[in-house]
Image 1: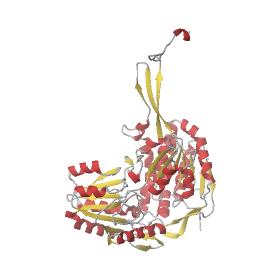
Image 2: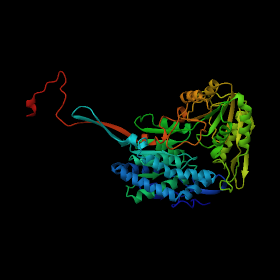
Image 3: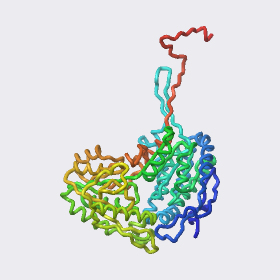
Image 4: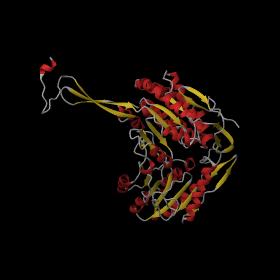
Length: 522
C-alpha cells in the first residue's frame, strides 16, 4: 500500500499556517474506483488540527484583508499560471481518484484557471462590479458611501464529484475579497483536495502573502462537523447532499450572522414537447443523465415526454443509453462512463432501482453491475418508466411510488408520459429540490411559461440540465440550495456591504424639542 499519489508534492498532509504537517496512517484510504487494489492516498486525520487551522486562518485574516485587491489578484493570477502548468497532473489525479474518463477529468482541471478570469473580470456586467464600493450625494454637504468587507474565516467543504473545481469555485472569490480559508475536502477524494491546496500555497508564498491564508484539514464527518460548527469561523461554503447541508444549518441555528452558502443536489427534470428537435432532445437527455456516471448534481434524473412523441423518444433514449461506452477511465479510444466512486455507492444505486421496481416502475433498460479490466465499481446506464412523478412527503422513509422525489446519485433515468404542457410542468415541479430544469420545444409561449413556472435556479431551453456556465449564477431552490448561488455569483457571498455617511460641514440637524446654545462651543 502506498499513501501518496505521484502528482502530489507532499506526503499526505494537512496545511496549517503555511506548514505542511504529515498525517501518516490509514484512517482514510482513497482508492482508484476503476482499480480498487490501487491506493491513491491514505492518512489518519487529526481532529485537533481543525482548531489549529482555524486559529491560523484567523491570525492571517487582518493582514490579508488589508492587502489591496491588486495584490490579492496577483496571488490569484499566480495560481492561475500554476493551474495551467499542472493541468495534466490534476487531470491524472481526478481520473484515478474519482474514476472520471480522461476527457472529463481534463475538462474539470481546466476550469481551475478559468475561475480566476471570471472572478477578476472588470467588465461592466462582471461579478466584481457588484462588490465595488460606490458613493451617493445625500445632501449638499453629506455623502453616502458603501464599501465591502470580507466576512473573515471561511470554511470550504468540498464534494467528491468535482473535488477540484467546486472548492476552487468558493476559494478564488473568497480570497479575492480578502477572506482566509480552511478547506476540508471530501474524504472520498482527499488527494484532489491536497493538490488544490498545494497550488494555492505555492501562489501565496510566491507573492508574499501571510502564512495561514489558506489551510487544509483532511477528514470525514467528524472533521466536517467540528469545522462547520466552529466558534471562530465566519462562513461555511458547502457543496454536497441535502442531508449534510441540513446538519450544517442545524449546527448554526444560533449564529444568524454566519454566512452559509449551500449547494445540495437536485432531482432535475427535462420536458420534451411534440415540436422539439428530437435529435437534440434525445442526445442532450442521454448525455446529461449519464455523464460522470450520473454523479453530477445537475444530471437529468427525470424526463417528461409528451404522449404524441413518447414511443419514438423513449426508444431513442434507451438505444442511446445502451450504446454508451463504459470502461477504464484511461482507455483509448475514450469511453463515456467510468466507474462510480465506491462499492457502497454502486450498491445504493442498484438498491434504489430494485425499490422503484417493487413500487411499480418498469425497468426498460435495467442497470446492472459490471466488471472492468481492473475490477472496479462499474454500473451500466438504467432507464425506468414510471406512471408519474410525485413529491415525496417530508420525512418519508419508505419508497412508496416509483416516481417518488428522490435523488439517485448514479446513472438511472426515469421517464413519464404526459398529455399536456400543464401536466408536464406539474410533474417537473413535483420535487422539493430545485436545481436545474430543461424544456425542449420551439413554442415561444411554452418557453415563456416554463421560464416563469419551473421550480429551479437553472432553467434551460433546448439544452440539457448538466453543464452549467461559470459566467452565470449557479444554485437552486428548496432542498437544492439556500439562495446563495455560486458560479459568477460566488463573489457575492464572500463579502458584505457596509454603509456610511460622511459630513463635510457643520450641518448637524437641530430637531424639534432640542435646545442649542452657541456659547457652549465658544
